[in-house]
Length: 503
Image (cartoon, rainbow, N blue to C red):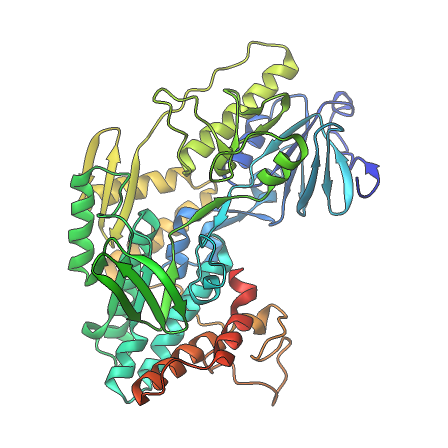
């Protein structure tokens, strides 16, 4: 093991906690925070570790990406959520190794001991073996992803506003979204609202009717986890917003400005300045690290297969919850879905179970309550399947809003979101339309764009399109002039520029 064995000792409020069992929770998402709160009154010392110092409400990232809300509306510092809990210490860093035999983790280069370990590190995005596509089509899993998408959308609109060629303007006004699940549908509706309403109100040269949004999915319908009736309703709503559907389509190739989609009728080339990826989810890499340590079972997707109490077989002191676990001990034998509701319930159960073990009381049994699923499609239109009860339209939107506000962990964010949603419904305006520049200008990336810190007279202006959009524009220009695909150098420049934001 790397580093020295050590404890970061809490200064306990009561002497009885000085030698209390140590519970380490890795991950400050839905499951991790709820586990932490469930242990609030237990005689334990808790260390909550995350590589971010905030809890992110991922279901609303698409609203950050389309300017409806700002980053502060969907992210809450962990120290505000649980830092005031008297038996909790919050630490910033990333766990890189796990040593179950020694009951240690390697954190920030040092070995750190535990009595109980809860792994709740969630999931990321996958491009199914085509990681080079990540540069051309940002996913949407973290705040930087959402802000990168917003920057690309707004910059394309800014460039279209000053482009005299109507065909070039339409290219800049074209967006391809890959994935027809809840995230893809919500993104498609929000992008349509953003580009059509913002263009009509704030851009003088652009024609909202020329906006083109194409939603690509390999299945035969949207929202395949929902009843077919709601799927049809969602498709009707999105098509009413001008979104084109391309079903039975699988992305074959991707480059700046172009996506090639394979269909039963042959390949289709979609030319678009902006491409957004919502199609693939992978569990955190920590599951593989755990499997390498104790050879625990992983499912086909890489999630850790767990026991009925979310422990790892042979290691009852290790629990895995949220998107990182494969929990099949349900009434129908299907794994728990990777959503906020199951993660929150699992985290709360694990916290209560650990507290019962330490107190020597009866342990609880986990029973998952399926609230259902939902997706918002328009400003006041959503579809919801709540335990067999189907809703759509305005009633669906009200249920969607109530559910998301209920799951939001921070009271202040609930209020700010409610006010911004009401403002958007009434005014059709967006609250967060800031265009803050290129990733390399803010992340210290050594790329063809202006470096950070920005120096006067060196590099392009902050108002210039970044290398990703520039490569797409050059591709389109070459296509129109008959020169074929853009040169390799432009692709490389695009990749260098966007790597920090979307990898």
